[in-house]
Amino acid sequence: MHFRYGSFPVLSGVSFSVGKGELCGLFGPNGSGKTTLFKCCLRFLHAERGRVMVHNEDISRCNIEHLARLVAYVPQEHKPPFPYLVREVVLMGRTPHLGGFFGIRRRDREIAMDALATLGISDLADRPYNQLSGGQRQMVLMARAIAQDTPLLFLDEPTSALDFQNQMRIWEIMRDVAGEGKTILACSHDPNHVAWFCDRVVVVGDGTVVAEGPPEDVISEAVLGEIYQDVCSVRMLDGVQMVMPRCVAERNGKQESSRPLHDALFVGACGEVDAGT
Amino acid sequence: MTEPTGFNHLLKRLGYETSGGFGEEKKIVILLSLAAVLFITASVAVVLGTYNITVAEVYHTIFTHLTFGDVESLPKLHNTIVWDIRVPRIILATSVGGALAIAGAIFQGVFRNPLVEPYILGVSSGAAFGAALGIVFPTIFFSIQVFAFAFGALAVTLAYLLARSRGETPIVTLILAGVIIGSIFSALVSLLKYLSDDTALREITFWLMGGFYYATWNDVILLAPVVIISFFILWSLGWKLNVLSMGDDEARALGVNPEKYKFVVIALATAITAFAVSLVGIIAWVGLMMPHASRMLLGPDNRFVLPASLMMGGCYLIVCDTLARTLTTAEIPVGILTSILGAPYLCYLLRSKGRVIFG
Image (cartoon, rainbow over all chains, first blue to last red; front, side, top):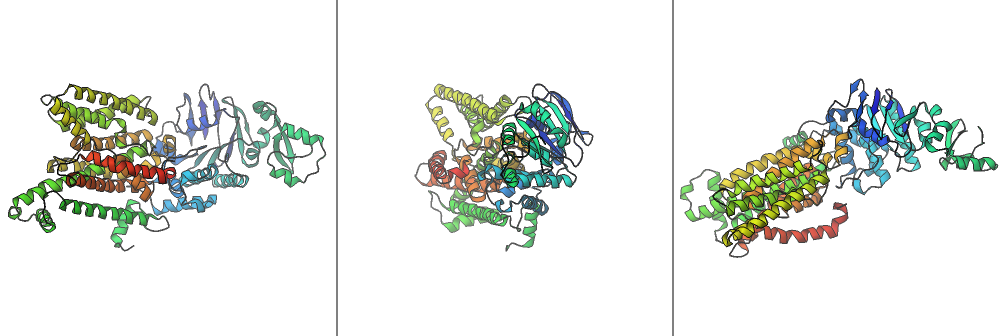
């Protein structure tokens, strides 16, 4: 699979490829064009120049119905005006596979309910979707993308509104889905998430690819320094790479560490470790 | 479920689930009940009227016609009143109410706005102008109905073209374009009113209020099949309409081409609205209220909302029209009644369920 896209001024010559079954993280500062990139790939926006290839097929030529069987999309945030039930929203994920009068078969319902169970939100099935919290809606959209059962998934900040447990759950689910041979392109703002869970990382900044490769190479102080203007430090903790704010790293580096380590982990990115690892 | 298995099988073929925790059997029962209510309302309405005919005589007349019995043996007056006036009028009211309610549900879904009514794109103003032309210049514009329909359709076409740019019709632009076109045609209607003499002015005013005074079998034969066919087409797009109401980008991601389906459903909804309006004038509120009422009963899934709207719209207009022709000796224009009965209902909705329905 090969992505190539070029447009001015949001995206100027972004080009990268993602292999089958990979969980690829798309990483970059606000306004760097991650969502725009997704929207161009999904043809919500028309690319000025460039192509998006899936299995050697140029998807800018294929029709919307066909595209929806190839790619599922989880948008950042969205609220419909009507109180559809959660299971109806998830069932909408089956739309590209339906045929006939209404075409909804029992099997589609089972897939929808299974997707809810995968996400652990079966209890939300009968709640109106537009009355859920932002995080719950995000879980529902994730379930919908899984129900859509496509070889390729685009996730636009799938964990942005979630609590810590659900963030980890979503990333674990993404790992499982990638393990089934599906390809995921997910964007995220947390360098640690990307480093912990992704097979590959593409860092975009100012509409171009700043770096790409395995997370241990890409999530480095040099790259983060380039896109975030030197606010990050990268440390190792129990052999796991941790990104933390430089101010925190420096503050704690000067003090003698006395707090237990697991405490540090659950504060998220602000851990405390020996400086200079 | 007590229905025979053949019926269950049919439901499954249509994609409705009769078991398995999806709760759709309850909704199907509600739909069937609504059909029964519609039938009962029509049966009661046909008996009521200023001219007293006994219940037995009314049904005897209808039964004779339906079984191709000896029509000549019926009392001539009863036959005329029941079969040539009341029955077509009730069927026409059902068709018009159904058409407006379906169109309302469609427009609300496509525009993702539960406060939209079928006249939003200017079809009523256009039709009013066409009708007014027909009334003021009967020699040039030979038929009120034809020109009401033509101008109603023209108004929506103009709005659609005005809103379309670079292969897309954004919803906000479309609504704005509808408002603009609508106001132009309203101004033109006012101009015609200003120019017309007293008789024509009176006629225009009455037309604008809507009514079934002149309902005949010809109207029924024209409108009912169109409404039924359009309904089945739109109903079959019910699930796609659900997806469409999630927003254009969402629809695209789920494989529903928003431009294509927006065009199809708006065209069909406009056609039946314009057709209904051209036959009976502008009847307000049905298209706004009935989809709401359906959603309150059955939830927002358009596979249920559309048939429910059809039946509730039909029911509501039968009730309003029966009141219109029986409350006083002179007829009240039905548009007045639909508004008087409808506005409090919407107030009630707003006060009681506002947060659920209006977001």
